[in-house]
Image (cartoon, rainbow, N blue to C red; front, top):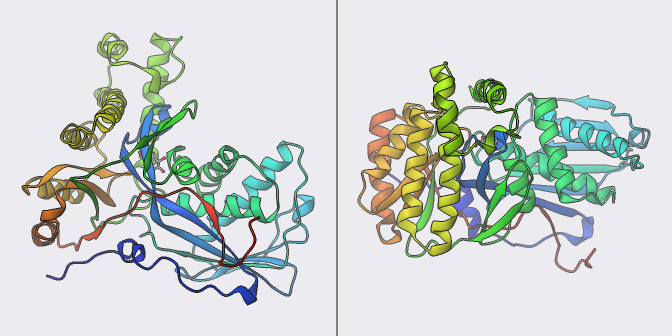
Length: 413
Ligand code: GLA
C-alpha cells in the first residue's frame, strides 16, 4: 500500500518560493497546532501544553478597485464580501455571500473585532478596497485546529491592516469569541492561544484560567513525533463537544456547592477531589472529573519529564491520557482507539494518544525514526483492515505563532 504523507509534510520541503512584488501584496500566516497533553481541560481553567506547527492558513491581501472588503478561499467554494467603507461607523454590511459556511468564521471575527474596539472606546478603521485570499495546508476537522488558525489569522490581519495594534491576548479573545458566539462552538482558549503565542521549537505550558504561560523546549531526539490523521471526520459543531462542555459545567455547579471557595473546576487538586468525590452522585460526572483532575496532573508531570529529557516517561503520560479520554471522558470512538492501539502494538512506539476534541481527527505518536517506514506500513495495513479508512501521516516542525510573512525586498514594517 502506498504511504500517504499528508500535505503538511510536503509543505515543509517546499517553503519559500518567488513572490510577486509588483502586486504590492501582504501575506499573513497563522499556524495550526498540536497539543502534547492536556485535553478537554481548557474550558475548565485547567492546564494544557500545545505547540504551533509549520502547516497552517495563509492570507494574501491585495488591492481591489471597489470599496469592498472581500474574502475568498482557495480550498472552499464561494466568497464573503463586506462594505469596507461603512466599517468605521461600526456597521457590518454583507454585500454578497456565496460561501458554504466558512464565511461564518470571517463574519464572526470581523464582528468580534468591531465589538472589542467599540468596547475599548477605540476608533474602528475603514478597511476598503481589499481582496483577501485564504488557503490552508491543514486538513479540516482533523484536530489540528484549522478553524482557530483561520480565526486568529483574520483577527491578526484586521489588526495589522487597520493598524489597531491590539495585544496578541486581545486577538486570542476575539478569535475565541468568534467561534463561541458566532459559530456556536463552546471551544476553549487553547487553540487560539497556541496559534497566537507559538514559539519555534517550544511547547507552551499554559494555565488556561490566568493565561500565565512558560515555554518548554522540545527535544524529541532520539525519537520523533508523528501525527496520524485517522480519516474519520467530525466537526466540533455536530460532535458531542458541547455535551462534554455542559457536563463539565454541571460538575462544576455541584462541586462549587460543596467547596464554594474553589475558584474554578481546573483548580481542583487530586486531594481536594478525593474528599468531594463520594458526594457526587451522578457516575457520569464523577468519570468526567476523574479525567479532568488526572489530566491536569499529567500535564505537570509531562512538563517535568520533558525538562529532564525523560521521553519514555513523557510518552507513557500520552498513553495514559488516551486511556483516560477513552474510559473516563469518553471522547475517543472506535477509529481513534483502533489507531492508538495499532500504533502501540508496534515495537518502537513509546506512546500514543488522540489529540484535540476527539471523536475523529488525529493521533500523536512518539516513534523511533529508524523504524518510521516500517511503522507507517504497519499502521496503514492494520488500521485500514480494521476500519476501512486510510490514515495519513505528518511530521511537523514546531513553529512560531501568527505573523506577517515579509516578502523579499519589502521594508520592515
Ligand atoms: C478543541 C477545542 C479546544 C480544546 C480541545 C480539547 O480543539 O477547540 O478548545 O477544548 O478541543 O482539548
